[in-house]
Length: 242
Image 1 (cartoon, rainbow, N blue to C red):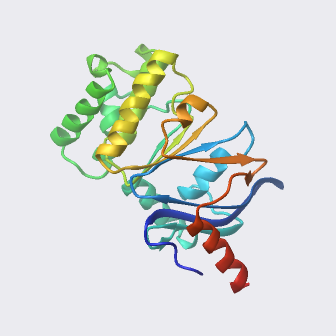
Image 2 (tube, rainbow, N blue to C red; image 1 turned 120 degrees about the vertical axis):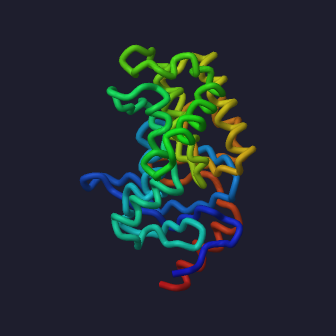
């Protein structure tokens, strides 16, 4: 194995993955710096979600490496990868997945409560993010009483409440109307920059991608734009080591 560049908090080399024999990723390499917002673009079925799931440790690539800081995620056990996702990563899905029996603030506070934070501290942090996302007035309501756009804001608050090292956002504004989408994205990008949160954002929306520091494009599971020099060097080192 070749160690990742020092300035990349997240680094992947030659990722290859298949779903039931159908190629989803084919030799994809990339690096993401601390605090950077990286947009992953491409048409539906291009491999965006699979890439995010490999980078976050939800999937183990058939071939290739994924590093978080100096830790090889691809060689971790399932338990260690689960802990990594709980303690250092966050995830926003296209559709909000909330616990129906819990209120909005309880859903937003859930990651902190699972880490052992006090009830008061978790509620305070959750309420802060709900207010920033203009959903604080509904903090005591359960998901079933809210609109889909409101539920998605709660899911975003839940992802930000832990101030993760890396936030993976898979089409996070897909269910939102244009005005809601703009407000949520402003909050998300402002939070990322103020808290030095690294964001890997999969999107079909060109306007969303413009908010990122850099864009990577996938087509049929392959990266179609040129990698950074550090990524190209990693790929060359892999070839030399074979």
